[in-house]
Image (tube, rainbow, N blue to C red; front, top):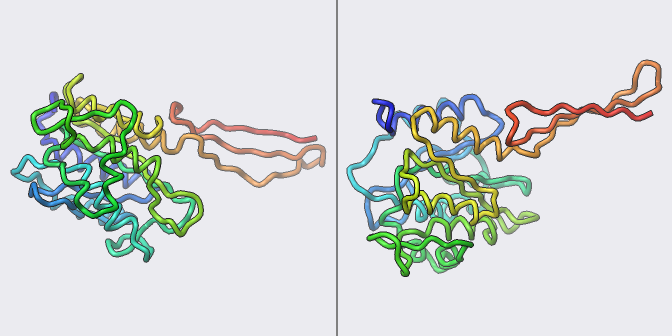
Length: 273
């Protein structure tokens, strides 16, 4: 990044470790992109539900590869089709889907230093993935290997995010629809660039639920992840059981509300006579 001598990959790993260590209200998993341009899958690092220690140990062996492949939409589709949609359930195991309850919410945070590359085979993984690649979101960003284009080949990410939000069902046997929300953190991406525009469009693709944060420094990566997780928790409530005052005159009901714009939960007290 622009102000640190720490390699970008180390800043990313440190931010992930801090989040998984201190924000333990969620279950976390980590994947990467692959190095071969003709590989349409994802690079497994730690399955969802892994402990902080297991994630830290897995990240310790992760390093940058020498290729320019950044197959982000392929990796997202692959982790959905080959992992999240499995029909046996459990945690911390790549052979078991962590999406086992109808109340499960699934969020993917992309961390990238530029736009996707070699990301053109999303629709070739299997016949079901065509919808993922060609569902057009509002403001669809279209590009090929040379840049902005009228022909889509390397900017499928907003398409994949749009389908994941509007149409995907990770576990059709559960009640409701188990969709997925994609957000992104740019690693010091140039403002106004094609990558910047693509990642910004994730908000349009997910009805404003997914967000984009551009991190100028290593510390900003952690700040961006905290902001996204704050938005995830926004609107969540914790309620206590109602209690009756000693004189029997009132029933007291308390709860707190978590909002994405307030770093502290908002407390509420209500009394009924």
